[in-house]
Image 1: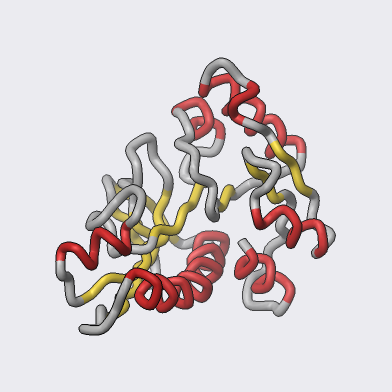
Image 2: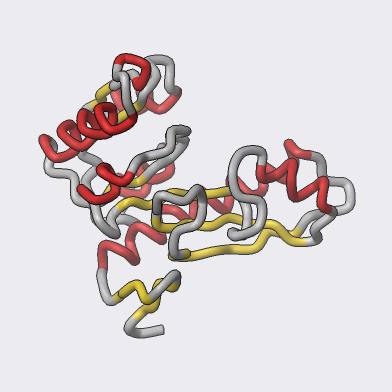
Length: 188
């Protein structure tokens, strides 16, 4: 989230961050957003008896601020079909692997346990299936022989901080379409 905000401030990303939202009041990004004078909102998921009711509140908060593209960054809740229907082809997420490999939690740990030589980062559209949406961009990160979870995660995070704002810029610029599971670019 911080990388996205910084990219809007330094001119790499022509966008306005309308809201930083969390489902937990102790989410790290909230303090940064407040310091950056970005509107914040906390909607505790445990306050709602169903996912659909939680999603409805999130949709209302986003629509109330004119949000057009939702960028998940550390939001560790699955979003349901009603939420995704409210923002069709307009919800992005970033994941610390070269999807479809190592979806879900602990992707870096999974990669190391499998002995891969290359991992990376993926920005993808969010669908109702976990980490399975059409891929916007990916970048490889070599796995070094002496890597542990922390060193590899740090190198992947550095790539994520550059890759996510770039993916957002490309999506906002247009010239893309989704065919099946593929994001196709007009000038690619």
